[in-house]
Length: 285
Image (cartoon, rainbow, N blue to C red; front, side):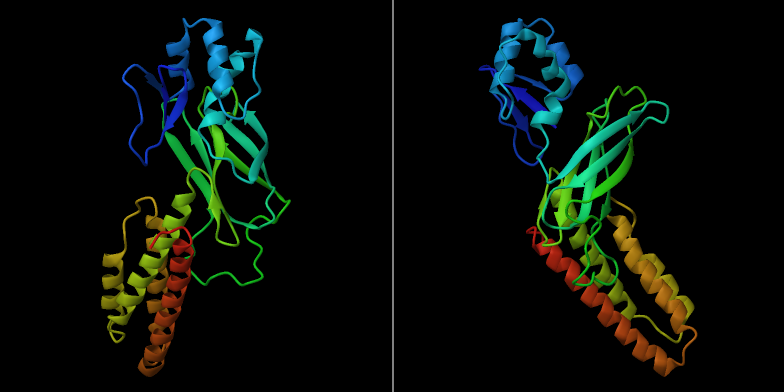
């Protein structure tokens, strides 16, 4: 994420998804250190004026509080708020981790979440729980991974010299009704699309195998497994299930195996339809 400070001292976020809106006389920065380098010689009055232009902050008249600007700029301007709140973030300097406690303040169960960490070199790592299914869809009474009002614990690794947990935030949350919010909410819908595609690919591959030659069938499925590439694990999970099913077919009579194969292919397609429907809720088709 990149910031642009205009010649009128307005701070804008330059999103990766769209073109940068900058002016020739402005300045850009992407980290606290870069801002410190940029603003190191500015008069305190200018810092106060910039702070007071930020949305959602309390106006300052005393220069003593301006230090908070440099320390919390990223947390206050980059990340979209979610109903999954971080209520505690405890740094363990020995283990180089942050122990997070999250609270679901929404009226909906949380079905998937992502937590992001920005390292001092500018890189961002996103980890999470829940999301796309390479298996049977959840039952209607499923309450997700986090009920409304419930707490959730998560431990993430931070920079070895981190002094706090300010670089960690909730970047995506999905709820049972299929809505999602956060910086990386689109990733959740993209994962459902990837799961749907891989389940359909596995189903099509199973339809084409020779059930009388399990070894050949297994080799053909293994050759079609995708390589991990962000969502590749979903692809591999779908084909892993197909490979497991081939092992089951080896123990059955050919007629029974053919019937079982048709049933399993239909299951894979129904699972794919569920994941495609979830992706479509986010406009991913």
